[in-house]
Each structure stands twice: as structure tokens, then as C-alpha cells.
Amino acid sequence: MQAAIHNGAAELKLPGLDAVARLGAAIAARLQPGDAVALRGDLGAGKTTLARAILTALGHEGEVPSPTFTLVQGYDLPGLTVAHMDLYRLKQPEEIVELGFDDALAQGAALIEWPEMAEDYMPDERLDVILTAEPERRATLAGHGRWAGLAPLIANEAA
Ligand SMILES: Nc1ncnc2c1ncn2[C@@H]1O[C@H](COP(=O)(O)OP(=O)(O)O)[C@@H](O)[C@H]1O
Ligand SMILES: [Mg+2]
Image (cartoon, rainbow, N blue to C red; front, side):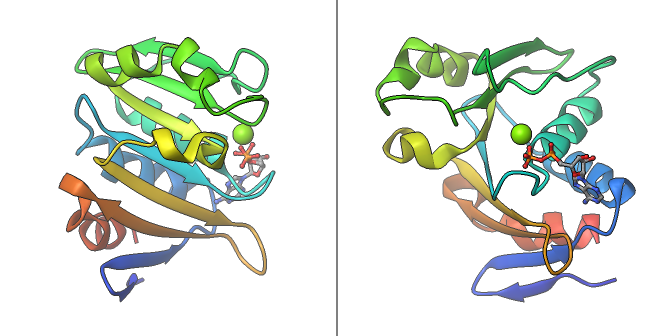
């Protein structure tokens, strides 16, 4: 299966959890401190599932609880520290600072569900992943900064 590329953004189908695991591995392989993966899409689109796949590819064993209520969950993994955030319940965008966002990016990478809640705080070094479940499960990847050229590579690797 080939990924579709338009203007540097890349789209691929995610027909099941194996496909999510491949996408997670392709993203994880390129993650560095200071990077954010902005996981966009409606409730049930697959944001937590992709975060889980990225963390698993980075060597995390065990559960990845959805940070719906804690808002942030930290993972100290062999090669990288990762903050998994869910901003859905953020009341003000600036609350993201209180969650330790700056430190998280200074020390490692961040996987962010509902980045729209603090859009102005999203870093320049970023991969946007737009997930949809209907009419079929898909991901559209758009890279910024260092990630600008990487979306097609990641999509082709995962497809
Ligand atoms: N690509 C996929 N193929 C099949 N099922 C998926 C896929 N992505 C997610 N799911 C399933 O959809 C449900 C919702 O996913 P979740 O990651 O919790 O969504 P979100 O975090 O966007 O609300 C879960 O049961 C998950 O296993
Ligand atoms: Mg979620």
C-alpha cells in the first residue's frame, strides 16, 4: 500500500492496530528532545492508540493509561523522556505551562492529544497527525521545522 503525498503532507490508511503500530514505530524512530507530535482528531479517532504505539516502539512495556484526567503522564524510556498529554480538559491555554510543558520539551518529547486547546504553545519542531475514523481510519501527516520533509518518509515506511 502506498501513501498519498500532497504538498509535503502525506496520507495513509490505518485499517487496524498493526498499521497503527507501524506508524508509531516510524514516528518513534525520529523523535528527539524538543519534538512534539500533535495528535488531532475527534473522540475515538485513535489519538491515544497512536500515542501508545509510539511509546511501545520506544521501549515502554505495560499500560499506557489515557491522560484524560491527569492531563499529563510521563515516561522515562531508554533513549528518551516522553510526556503524553491530553489537553481536552484544559481550561485556559496558558495552563499548559503549569503542566510542565516547557520542561517536558527541554528534556524530551511530547505526544499531545487535543493540541487545539493550547495551539499557540505548540513548538515549531512538530509533526501534526490528523486522525479520522470515518469513512475509514486514516492518518494525515504534516511536518514542521525539522519534521518538514519527514511526513512522506514516515507515511511510506508505515504504509
Ligand atoms: N487504526 C485503528 N484501527 C482499529 N481500531 C482502532 C484504530 N485506532 C484506534 N482504534 C480503536 O478505537 C478506539 C478509540 O481509540 P482512542 O485511541 O482511544 O481514540 P482517541 O484517543 O482519539 O479518543 C479504541 O478502542 C481503539 O482500540
Ligand atoms: Mg484519547
